[in-house]
Image 1 (cartoon, one colour):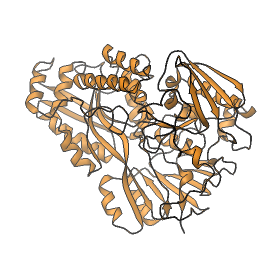
Image 2: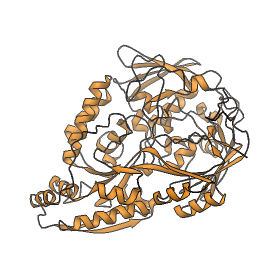
Image 3: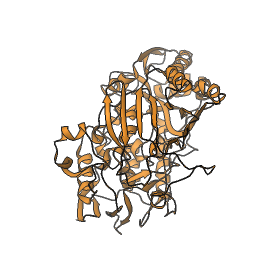
Image 4: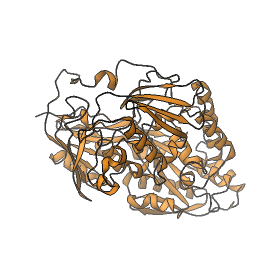
Length: 539
């Protein structure tokens, strides 16, 4: 998941998603059906790809990437913050990755998989020739150690791997996973950063020593980390994709202020900058030295409620607020064409999004009628929590004015984005404007995390909300391998969610980046992944 900023109490704001080949599978991977393809890593690994104009990527150069926050850990199992995860993806790799279009997964450190007829046993063939950055070969023992470790960790997203019962290693190149019950999201779950593959038993070192100098199969190796300032990785000369990465190093610098990041890419201090203001994109594109765009993402911003606090446990209050909010007006005012009003909690770029979800429309009279049926018919005083980020603050200020029209007086609590999710997880809030971005191309990650109070890992994502109908639907969807039947389950779930409004989806937004014209090969998929091993710098 990825709640914007932090994923657990959480991270998102991440969320671009990906797709492709499910070789040898008895059933398609998560999301829409997939089939073996001739493209993808199995076909392109070892090749020196060319850009659309036929230009061969240039080797060398030191890439500088300015981002709003620093990493917090080198341990994939404990990582929950977006910026931490995007770095770890370049040091540790997973068995599967999200495809470029965000609709499915494709094999990465495996050649493919076979599923037993009872839909319980998955057999994986590991990719030949994969080495760790210390030169040692990756084996099935490393996979068993890494996945079991991720599944047992309670501080991150281990709950997504809870369906795994046993992992066996019949030989060095084969891994057999048996689940406790049929579990459709497994391949997508194995694309989650927390299951990044590392040497078994930390390569003979202690856990603390290992994460000081981590060893993975990724294209880069940690070189230096000046906490709060910058983090540098250098080329892994033993990387399994011949010729990659193209650049010698990547340095992520911490630049909290968005406009400062824009100035840096304009002035050449940074090659790539993320999380730029939407209103800067048009101006940046007028320059001959900089490109900018919002990449299609999975990010949805929504109002969440503390269901343990009155009057937000009253469905009529939630419905009144939903009717009072002009989502179209908010999206138009704050996104500058880089997003749309939201209806479903599931973004349009995510598999099983239902565009026909019957959400509550902007209707002030209907809002007043719902409030009259509630426990606070005359209105009430409310507080809304928001991270101190221009787009989100602007959205909340509009919401504040709109709710005033129906007698709800809102005080805005704007806090440092780094503290936002810790505040949510402590349940020290009434309402909040939060964001979610996907990390894998299966909606189960989001739906379980946000709506399964018992098994979702985070108290229904810090809302304490619970609805037996939704719980039943999401658990049925986890075990359903037929795509058409699974889509029907998620459609019904989205309809129930829209009726009960434990969250009010407000807008879907793109993922804004700017980069120097020297940068080639940059792509950000809907779950936010960016493969910097594919990026190269022209002279």
